[in-house]
Length: 406
Image 1 (cartoon, rainbow, N blue to C red):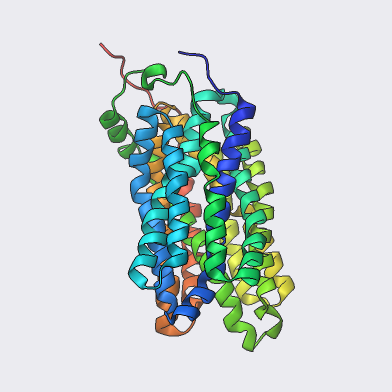
Image 2: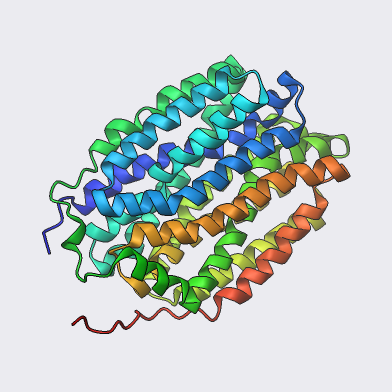
């Protein structure tokens, strides 16, 4: 096995910067919901469908991108992703019709996110970070994505307020282009596909994972994660705006912006804590606790009197639980199946996450347009959290035992 070509410090710095940009920009898309739909005379379902398509493309193509990164190395894939991200944001800015807007924001950015977010970066981590530090390093990287949300949401709201939606998106496109040189700094100079131990093929790896009950349990839980976080990210701001008739204090744009920023801030601590605890405690129990905690947080948010303070408390709790699932889920995948096809298998399980994201984004808008309320979607999010709590409990974290090769 070749000596790793990247230091842990280098991966954490530039891998963290990559997900800071990629995840930070995408988490602010909910702020563009009302400005874009109102300016173009579109219903919320139109914007929701674009974000839903983005998440669906991201999930569907992620295993393919992961396999390419595992086969040819990650940095070229990430450079292409940075280019597509910038083009997609620019396309959203200049599109005046629904089709072009959906293709730019849904297809191009969805493809870009397959190459610039956690799965590809975690593949680099798996190849270059010792196993005893792997979950911790994944937690650090996830925390960087959380910092991106905390940093970018106020920045995006400021750009929106100062320049309007079109110019704000063009400025974000310039920012996204920074991913291209960042990717080059993650180049693995001595990367070869076979430097990992074992000669398992892609087909064998896929069959092994799909037949493994724990992989299926993790996949079901990840669907719930995607549904909850994307529904809140996309629809929290309009939800608060709608209720400003009854609760005037929560209707100000600053409340939604602050809440989304708090999610990003507390997610830094949550993902870092998950990385630390995942090295010491059973990761399946931590995952179950995260999902159950989300259900309690959502129920409390709906039942308690609504105010800016209750919104901020809800955001802080949800933020701590927001992406804590990522290092734990990917850590279990690496622990069970090894790191040779980690990017591909993480991408496959992430597809379920993005199916949930599609449902959370689209049905949030669709059911609102049908009923005039988000209540039923909140209730679905609670029920799904209880389901994910139960389905993660039987996960087994032991490495698979493979027959010796002839």
